[in-house]
Amino acid sequence: QVQLVESGGGLVQAAGSLRLSCAASGRTLSTYVTGWFRQAPGKEREFVAVIRWSGGSTFYADSVKGRFTISRDNAKNTVYLQMNSLKPEDTAVYYCAAARNPFPISRVRAYDNWGQGTQVTVSS
Image (cartoon, rainbow, N blue to C red; front, side, top):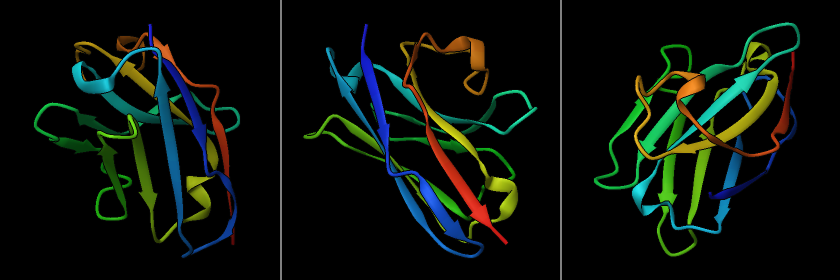
């Protein structure tokens, strides 16, 4: 198992930016697919973005495409989510998740390693 710890959440005004971090321990992320998901109050957890450690290919939800960027730092065993042009509807708890071979790649239940989450609140 890999342990994941998110950080970087907070309160920001609309159109602002935040960068979330997901630090992994226990295992290297080099053989994992790592993703970000979010859950707003009263809603189901939803896919945001994912990155394949090997090759670095990325995939985004339509709602964040062009505004969010997922990246990784091999040396730090850490994945990041840069969030720009934030909107009030981006308010949620953001979770980092990892799996060896999730399918489909955007499915919540395809991931078996989760962090505790970090709150992001965007004010209008």
